[in-house]
Image (tube, rainbow, N blue to C red; front, side):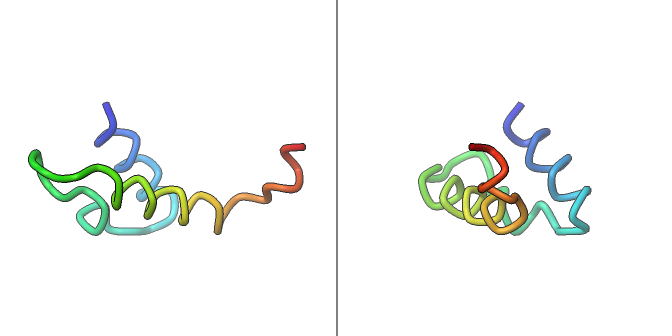
Length: 49
């Protein structure tokens, strides 16, 4: 399910999901940090308050 979400989000932004999806054996922390950075970059967080 996580991969599906990443692929969908990347397709909306014209990004390559391979930059985020590292394979089946990896430490998820750096991947989640990268995803959080991208979401924060493209989301107006002030409107969520």
